Length: 619
Image (cartoon, rainbow, N blue to C red):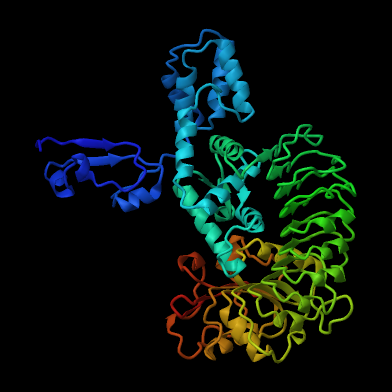
């Protein structure tokens, strides 16, 4: 090998390749002459497999860089007219900064006249190929990424992403619930396990350059995006491959049901439109997914709409104006997932009790006074979300397959005809995720046959107040498998042993509203007893504190000059906890520890507990 430095570029690598087999020297030989190998790939796992020392991601280009790359590949040195410039910019903008699309479209149109450019712009704006007579490199490359996916479940999950509107921040939980509804991830024993698989697939799709990171600043890991060019390719794949026939008009401003409907459709997405009226019947015998959510003007579903045979498994009617469900609902014998969230005019869903195959039912924030007793017939139900509503007594105990339960209205001390008692929840042996509100600790049974195995929970315990619903909802926005306790009680020490073992000892976050002065002593005492050792964060709001629970201003973070006694924190340290800092010290920034407790108090004193190092910080 020559002694001068070399840069060897290996382009478009799709799988692990032995470089020696294509004539490239070993790493040691390259080091001797200070040479390097640069490879390009659309699959991140190729970088891992080939032990790349550095990985450089090529992100979406800015508008200026996109136009520069586009003009260079279209060989446009100057614009012959203002009209031509405008249409070129329109076409370039439709590529949304994706380099491979910019290059492919620019090369396809470089020698075309103004009329062809106009046609291309119109086609791209309708999610069609810029040149119908030419299979563009962008499509072929994205299609190849799709073909390289591990198995059919990964491919099906990817295609579900194109059911959402362009430029949409896709909630991964919504994507997961549609996927589980059509039968993906059936190998998983629980919904919790299946959800973990879904997040793994999302990561794999991002690593394969088929999905993008969310652009949101708030909880971005719960969202994912699909580039418009990738989405167009996915739609073309869905139209061309057997078993996938999608009609997607999501977010297109439709006022009416599509006039031409392919009876072979397997998925129809008309979400986020202005549709007012549905046809008398929907004739799609192979239909599995129907998404009509966020059509606020849709007021009713014709009685005969679902009478034609179909294979419908997922139906989303959330955020529509419907007030009742037609009797033909009972004919949906394959339906697994039904979503009726924020249907504020909905008053009764008793007909849902006939759909014995149902596994997911979400009716959060509707105007249902309570679930109808017919829901007790749904013995296959695995996920129930009735946040904002109530459940009749003796109903939950019939739902033996329930794995996840979400509800806001509180359980009372004694179950009656309009409110299910909390001991029904503890008897659900398959329950893994629980988000509920309990009126007080007396609602919790003293004994249970078996300790529940809740892997995630958000449990509020205390008197229900309208003003605290925002706190509950903010907790709902956290991770589904979070382990959070919200208290509005006088003491933490009155819970039965099984509740300590199942919930309190597993809790990672403890929020205490209207906490008495003895509350922190309770926390320390329970900690000394070997409990609360999983706790990572504590938020405390004093009984007379008028500030916000979250304490976000500088005064809340650092304290003030008020030296009222908290509970003599300068002298009391639990046994076995090493003393890291001791005595009063003002303006100590609480952000310096990975895991800490910030306690706001009427006295404006603060305690920081570093549970990560089992240390007590008293300020």
